[in-house]
Image 1: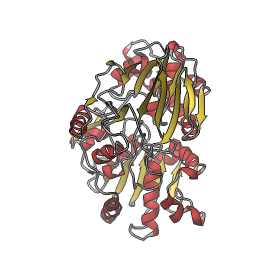
Image 2: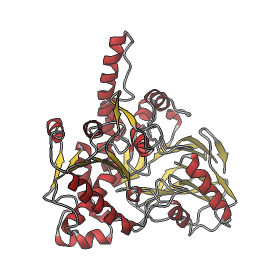
Image 3: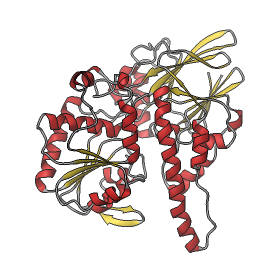
Length: 465
């Protein structure tokens, strides 16, 4: 039995881990690598294994850095099932189509430039047709039901509390007359956060592949974030500015809308309009509305028991068309725009940033993780001049980071996640989905708690279990 770490090793993007057991090859995730354009294209085109030789793909959740390269995998020969929760399947129906649309649109822009230079055209990473072929491979399962996925291997998906439908995956393996329990955490959510249920830890494991996004960072208490958000909005509105919030269309956007709804109801923020400028976010919100069984008790108490919509209120407008989006740039009064992408690497948010970044009254509010080399990360790091659509812009507006909205567990919550796995039983932990400055301190903390073998694998590393 072997594990090979093909993506998401010592980085937070492009998650792919290959399990080989009983002659079968099982891929955990097939995420899109995100970063510099040339590096991104090269990495996403090439797999460190033969896609046609895979027997199963298991998907923890719908975020593009975990699911976004499935169309490439299937176009290059994978013909088996993609196992995921039914809610993840519903979200991927939206997200993979949207990703393919963006791939095709972006390559048109790139090829216009290449034609002017006399360079030959390039192909998109994948097309909408290839995304549709990938979606036909999905098989939806329910939480907590053990499902055979390969000879001697059963998989059970358990609520990870990260986004709607997200799961940690328990693999129960029988090989060479022995039983083995391998856990894959996916992305671990945070207990006590609004909207979704708390994460359900994987238990009684022999080995664990665990994310480490915030392995050396503590989020501020969830109870403090509401007042910080409210006071921030009051301050910007009083100055006559606008607030631009780059946010992932699935998960983060709905959480921000939920919080704003509560603050408006409590009269803690001024009566200003809120725009969600993302067709994908609008469509994903409809999936959220169809799955109230995933919500926590607080959401039921505040909204659902009175048949109120957590994601709709009279100050909120979902913007779908390009024409409506362009009109937002002409607004002269205080307002809030929530727009994808969360790392500010594409989508409509780039237009809003370009039109807002040089006005000191405005605020860019960053509410989640941003990988290295992304525009959101450059803003987080305090760069004074940034490039948007290839042109330089001075950063004169305010920039604020509120990582308490993160859907990733912090250091303390990651350590708590292991409470049901004593070191005597859990022999090996592989830390993935984290940059070294986060993963390595978490490794040291786990070792100090008695977990003898905690590894931060390099890309391409292979381990025997």
